[in-house]
Length: 116
Image 1 (cartoon, one colour):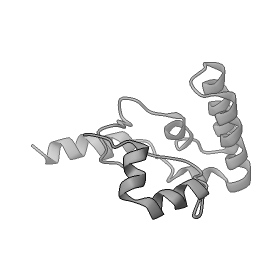
Image 2: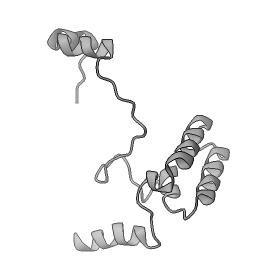
Image 3: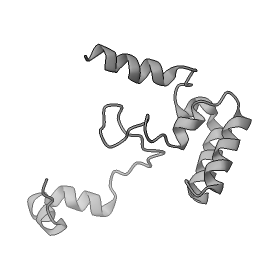
Image 4: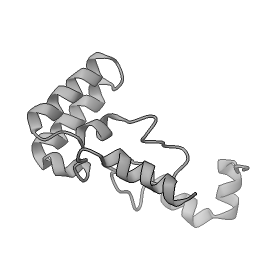
């Protein structure tokens, strides 16, 4: 994959480049998650803090997960604060569907059996 320079982009797309520079249409992104089929994010082998929060049954459990991940240095203090704010303002459901026991078995093991 090759990338073009900003100067080349401005020559090819002058109006779009001006809109980007001027911030004409900007939207704040609250979080980024990889698509389920993305090879770049493998939830089974490398779960992130959101994966662990989605297993929690209570806000207190989720707070403990965030505290633990922050203490270990796996998430930054700033990110931990954003997660706490989201947790208290929007609730556990805002992180995605709750992962019941057997979630990974149903999601990965059964899929691997079906593809054989």
